[in-house]
Image 1: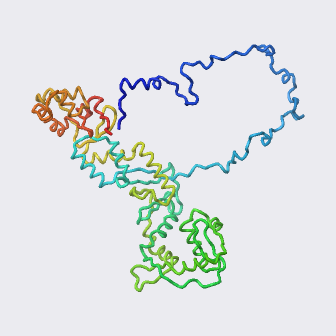
Image 2: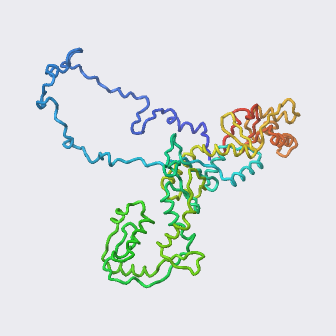
Image 3: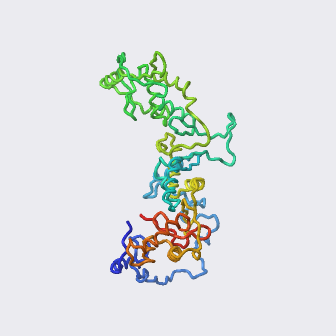
Amino acid sequence: MDEPIPTPGDLSDTHDLTLDLNFVPTWARQVPGSNPYAHFEGRGERSDRPERGRDRRPERRARPRGAPGPGQPSGGRPPPRNVQERPGLDRTAYPPAARRAVAPEAAPVEIAFIPERARLAALVHDLHLTRRAFPLADLAMKFLSNPDCYLVKVEVRRPHRPPVDPHHGRPGVQLFQCLDCKALFLDQQSAEAHAVARHLDRCFVVEDIVTEPPVGNFVCIARCRLSGELLGPPNYHGYNARLLELHRTRFAHLSLDDYRSRVETVRDPALVEKWKAAQRTQTVFKRKGAEPPQAMKRTEAEAYFREKALPGMLHHGQRFVVPARGTANWEDALLRQAIRAAWAQESRFPASLLFALRPAFRHMHLHLFKVSGGANFVTSIRPHPIPGDHAVAPIREVLRFLHAQPGCTRQQLVEGLRPGAAPDSAEVAAVISPLRWLIEKGHLIEFFNGTLALPMSGGQPAGRAAAPSRSR
C-alpha cells in the first residue's frame, strides 16, 4: 500500500530530518551549524625551526654520498627490517598467492529467455479480448515469474576465431543433451554418466531379491566417512566394485585416491553382521522385453546400456532450447550457475524477453507504441488519431476534455464534464456511450489501469500523463 501523505500537522515531526543534510554515518554526524575548528588553538612559533630556504637536514647534506649514517653498517644501506620482530604483526594473516581465492570459471555459453508458445498464445488472446494497452516490460516479467511460461536458450559463445577440434573439424566447445530429461552438459563423459545413473529404467526392470548372506572370515569392515555407508570387508570379492560404484555415483567430484583416503577400516563385529544382513537383499536388473528375463548385476546392466541404448540418448550441438522447469537441478554446475546469473540479470531488466516478445506480438497482430515517458506498451488496437473538429458534438466534447486532461479515468471524465450528475442519468450515459466506439476504432487508448489518453501523430498518446502510474 502507498504510504499516507503527511498532513501539515505531521510535517513538524519531520522538520529536523528534512533540513539535516549532513549525509554521513550516525557515529560521525556533527551538530548542524557547529564549527569543528572553534576550539582550535594555534601552535606557537618554534624558535628552533630553520628559516625558509635553509637546509633542514644538515647532517645528511654534509655526509659524502655512500658514507654510512648513524646506526648504519659500513655498506651504506640500512639493515633489512625484520618484520617478524614487529609487535602486533601476524604473518599468517597474509596467505601466499597460492592460497588466494581464484574466481570461479564461467561457462562459455550465452543464456537467453524466450516465451513459451502456448502461454504466449493465451496471453495474446486475452489482450485481444480486453482491448487495453499493457506495459511491455510488465508482460515480460509475468513470463519470467513462472518457469512454465518461458524457455531457456543455451548457446555456445562464439569467439572471433573459434577453436577447431582437429578430430571432428568443428568448434571444440560442444553441448551434450540427455534426450530423456533435456539436461545439458559441457562434456560428453558427464552426460554419459548422468544417463547411466538416472535412466537405466528405460531398458531394465529393477527388482530386489533375497539371497544367502556372504560367507567368509570377516574381522573388519570398511566404512565411508562421508556418507556413513558400509562398503564391505576389504577381503570381500565385491569390495572394490562397491567402492568404485559409490565414488562414481556420489563422489565423482573427488579423485579416486582422495576418496580412498576418506574410507576407514573398523573392527566391529556388530557392523560386520549388519553388513551381512544388508547383503541378503540384492538389486538385480531384468531387461525389458527379454524372454525369459535374465537377472543382471548393475555392472552388467550398465555395460549393456552403454552399448545398446546410450548412443541414441545423447545429442550434441552448440544451441539448445530447453524448458525452464528443472534447470535449477542440473548436474553441470557451470551451466546451472550461468542460468542462475542470467536469470538474476533478466529479473532486473528483461532484455532477452523483450527482444523476443516484440516480433512475436507484431506477428500476432498486436501493436506496440511508446508514451511520452519512453515506456513501451502493447495493445490489440492500432492507435489512430481523429480530428476533433470534424466529430459530432458529444464526441468532440470528450476529445477536447481528454486533450486537456490526458490520463484521466472514466469517473474523472464524467465529473469533469457533468459535475454533480447522477451515475445512472442520461447525461452521464451521453458522455460514456462514445467511449466504446472511440476505443474500438483506436481513436482513444484505454490503459490497463483504466486511464484514458488520445493518440497523437505517430500513434503516441498525448501529454505526459498518458504514461499511467501502475496501480499496486
